[in-house]
Length: 558
Image (cartoon, rainbow, N blue to C red):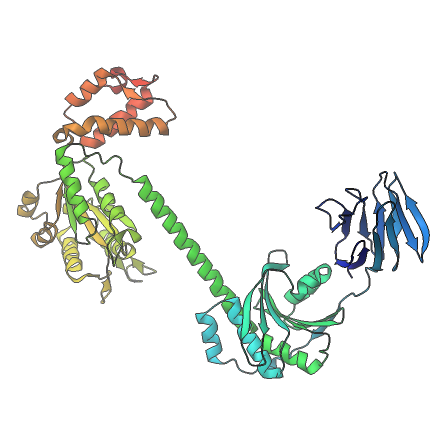
């Protein structure tokens, strides 16, 4: 039972507070605030014990008086005093026009009575398929509520005051989001939404909710709770109980048959509640995975913001113009250039910057594969996947990278190293836009973009049968020829400074520049290893350097 107080000053107000400690004073953070002249900042505290309430006065110059049956019983000043309260007691403050009258203070009164409603399993009518279909299509507490309330109205021909769906949290207490449904007419519109102010019966029975909810979790039957002349029916939802449905009735509802029918209506839907909450969990997990993938894709895109794709030389600017013209396309691309010129970086740029109206390629993933000589079966499975085959030791079907990269990009490095058979499967896939897994007889649609690379002469590869002519004819439509570093003289120093900044940050050093001698050597070097060689040399120089400028001794030029 809550403590009921009547405060009389210029006006008269009643307060009903259900707390173990109820502080009183003029300060704004008290449970009972008295903004009356003469009231100190803190006056005292009501304390709930097992069988009674006590008033505890704070020590101070204010004189606090307790009256019982109109006679002064206690007086407190400059001392902490405890008084056991009874109904009708009055607390007055000398010099302040305020009286606090105790209307009800018995904490043992109004204890809820819990009854178990045994629901015979043979009483359950069959669940209509459309009900399950509705819940599967719209797994939401609001859908569950409408189904339960509709069944309750149909079975009882009565109108519940409120129906609640409240989920358990890890502490066996109600979740703060409680969904309520309030029928506004006998067969009319039902309003559903989150109850921001917790008004469900379990909240009203806050001190007693723990045992009630524990009984719900350990039982498949409904509970009928009588409390303060109000009756509530609690029904566990799901197996095991993930939530509970509650019917909150007014004080004039005492028909046991009616309550039993309402409990049956909720219990009938209880098995479907597990489906509802499982689907909700799946959707939350899926939404979290999508958001996580989006975050990592965006982080990778920012990581590959392509500051290393320096294009101050005319030769590299021409490559960038070709790249910008192809980012919105999904046609295959062949990147040709010496080893170490940054072909994979260009492939990543195509992937991350690509965005067509209908099929944004950057929505999918980027898969890179070096086509170094390997067993045809292994590379076939890697590229195109396989079906389960006990004979070949495949216990489960597997997708290849072209299927996994749906709406994404597959980058095949040194494509000429693929065998003629695998190149033939690539040709078929590119022409028919479908892939056939190893051991399968059906084709599966493919929406991935192919980006291939080679550092060899294309005509020579075709003439020596290392690259199939039909594959070459498909790839030759879009070819990027990446210039070597010695052909892009204007990019050497900008690239070197970019690498210097990156590696200085990575290794926690404060290196800001190359000295003049190093810059001259950088420009004079022929760079047979292209950009990759420059990057490795700058990293080694940063590790050796002990000052703010990289010297020739750190670079190790011969």
